[in-house]
Image (cartoon, rainbow, N blue to C red; front, side, top):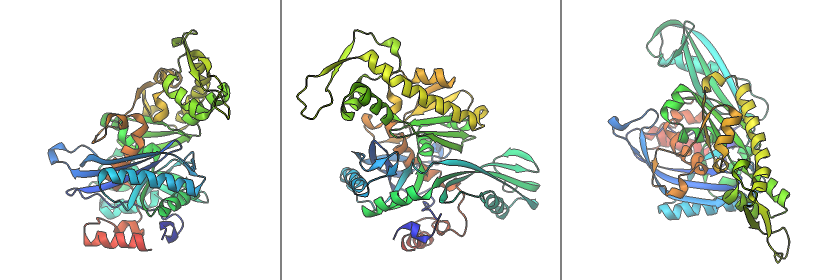
Length: 441
């Protein structure tokens, strides 16, 4: 039975990752251009090797990726086509891993992601207890959501004691007033419901939903960037997402409804060629710096036609760049405006990481630096083993971030009344009961 059958707003939540045990994790990145499934073993690190938020070493044992069908900008538009794409993708990963999987951590781009901020303050008896922390977080999480919206992530991002903020560990400290600030990322429920329905049709279960910008940032931001404050911009096929980290915590997200697919369609229309040929032209010859193109340099592409017998047309590479550049500039200008309107420009400083499949266009880094007026580096997923070189690029940042997510999921607030609060560890009796409840209700 679908997890949504439990009631509106009760999303599936992953259980806490046991710090001293290994676990197999499977993830699904559902994009507009491709669907990616990764299966990995997470093994506990030695205490001396542990990093903040990285208690386990990740070894990928299965990889599957399939051209996306039935999905547009992260939204399911054809149940049958999307189901087949997911089935083929997961089956390829299972064959490589020699394992059969039952549940997946799934990326979410659709649903008009929107960041909200909840704040609360309570009186204490002097020494701050776990009950005080749970109480103030519960009040901070009570943010009114628009109709048909659910809280995808709820993460405490700042504590204060007697009005003094920036306190990281409040348990056991003294104070008469405890305050908390919480980042709540909300999404429309209907796209999540349809995405889960497709996965259920493939006889799989959603273990957790994770916002694409959050996952991409987890895999590409290094520890210092997350701590000092940085923005991660993921340029995907159907959308460009933004994640901002501060003090190592995910504090803001947004998205722009433009991505690599829009560039491809600009080329297809501008040159009267098939979208598949336009995609190939973009990947092999696309560039955003027209000054690097010489007018005499040309490429040949097949014209648009039904019989395929027409002679190839010759196109100057400078023309390709001139078609690509306006769309890239428009996308980055929208991203710049969203960063400015977030009110967190001072948090980001000059640190921006660019990732996602569309970020690999030649010259894009320079164009982004010029428009965003910040230092920009290309982010590739780090902190995993078992991936071949073709899977270590920016296009796989979200999928790798989904593998990292179980190690930081415990930071999220889950109401005690939620079934998910009981799912502590599937290898313990309590965890098995919680797991059974999640699957049965």
